[in-house]
Image 1 (cartoon, rainbow, N blue to C red):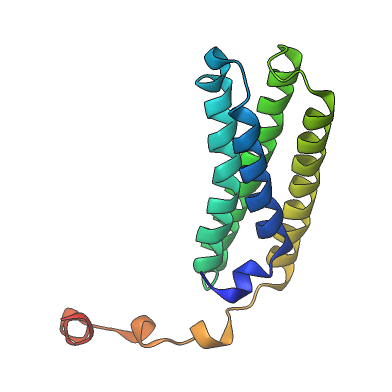
Image 2: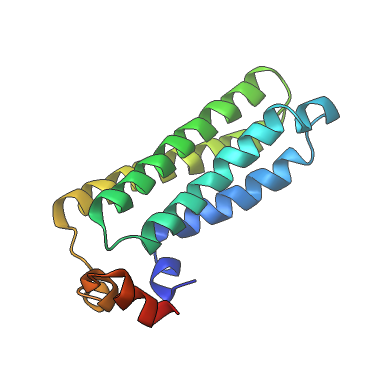
Length: 147
């Protein structure tokens, strides 16, 4: 994993939140662990995974934004699953709910601001601009590089 990714606040928050939610779901009632627990685990883990995929493809603004918007959607989905767990009584600990929900809300706000920044100021990273792969014109040239 690239060091630049690890410096992104949105990635750090998303990764940590996914770990916290995973642990929380292991304490849910058994029937809920495999129902709503499974859904909230997947949506929370998808946030950090989409940030990683988008960051890897950041050379291409449209792809980068696509993955960031998917991360935002998954973050919002995570909030909905947390609310459902709370309102159904499966997540009875008020402090745990409040902490996870507030962190997820903060993550959505930060992701939205990050997306706005990418939309306004995206530049292809210098070391990714004009790579050999962009200039390949024939299958023979790619064959030479990749065998």
